[in-house]
Length: 539
Ligand SMILES: NC(=O)CC[C@H](N)C(=O)O
Image (tube, rainbow, N blue to C red; front, side, top):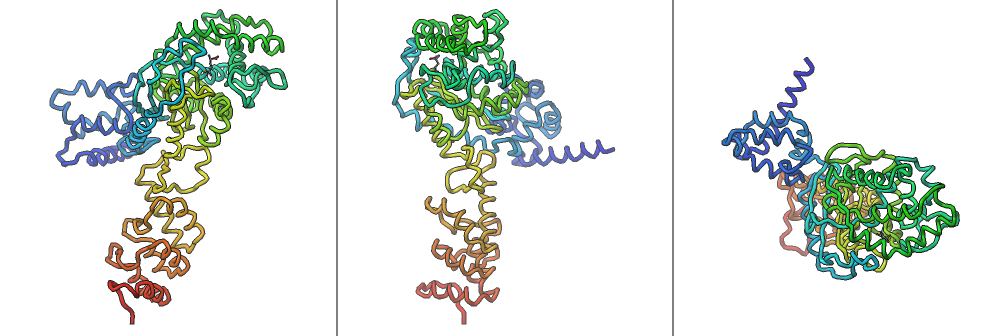
């Protein structure tokens, strides 16, 4: 009985969605239009390899004329198939990033700006990396709902280099737990370059995100397996994190690194000498393994999915497969946050404020926990070994969106300050901002009002542009509620009391007068005394 009731509700819900997209109300929606709407939200349902398979099949099985138009019955059939919950969310603007097309546009804008940055040089201490085209550039993102966007050379394979360190750490933690792993490697940022030849006071590498630490982690990964199996084992993890994508290997980079790796050999011997490795570690094998892990190659699109798997607590959003435990990812992100950008990590945690990892191949990947993963790839590096464009693009992104870990301290997001929430659509943000502002006026809370407006005042913000669905402005509220102190503040902000009208055609001055707030009326009278066009006069 209950089931029928539920189904009925569902059917009504689908009908509401269908009607909202049936612009001319002819009971049909062009299929291409629907697919495009879903694409705007980041799903290419016809291209995806794991999700939407049944829906894809259904669409291709539709007779020809229905392919161009679907009716409600077709729509309902689709909505009863696996993964239709995502389509429903996409059409209702309820995915984790509800304004994904707006986010995609921001990424494209940032890409165009940062493309002009030509500073930095390819890493050359690994000769093969110097050969990579310095102009390559891409940005790709994937949310925890699997919404994807990318721009530039996002299908070009690049060498992961130090980005491998984060994944290797997760693998070692899954295998042994943190107590054992951190008997062999610390958790503190080293404050020095990624290959500096020193150990911490316990004679251990400072952390797993720099060379010494990652060499140590390599020694911990499946030590009982033959070397070729250890390599395959790690590569399988990478592929699963990237939803089964091909993960390649750059043999020339591997060979050229191996040939020029005196520093890494030195680090290995220092740790050997300090007895930091587990017993029976074969240093030559381990260094070789470490070079191999650095020489894996992926595309930016795939790296964004890998980052999204971390953002999603270890579950790949495209396949729904759990790859790492939440705890493992938690530990990894904590270390990425404090140590992921070499000796720029402190500045990064301060100004960008989210976990990230970079590699000398030119990749920086960012994890916005519970929201998305982002990969930026561009081979030109700064003196610390971080991609110059990677850092620039990250900073611009963080300027635009409230991604910094402590951005939530600001309370309500101000859509006029150009720092937007990823988790709400622009319309929702504006509504919330307006609601908060009008409430502050109604509550006579001048301090809160000033806090809300502090940031936006600098942005040529116009107080008269704020109104709710009844066209009620802050000036209307202050006048209706007889809040004199706020009235003076709004006057300072050039609020208009004499021309703006609400839905009922009333100005703020009308409202004050109607309510019999004589003092407010007097103040406004004085204010407009010099103006000929005073709409309202008192006796
Ligand atoms: N920062 C990096 O990306 C360094 C990795 C490189 N394979 C090295 O050991 O030097």
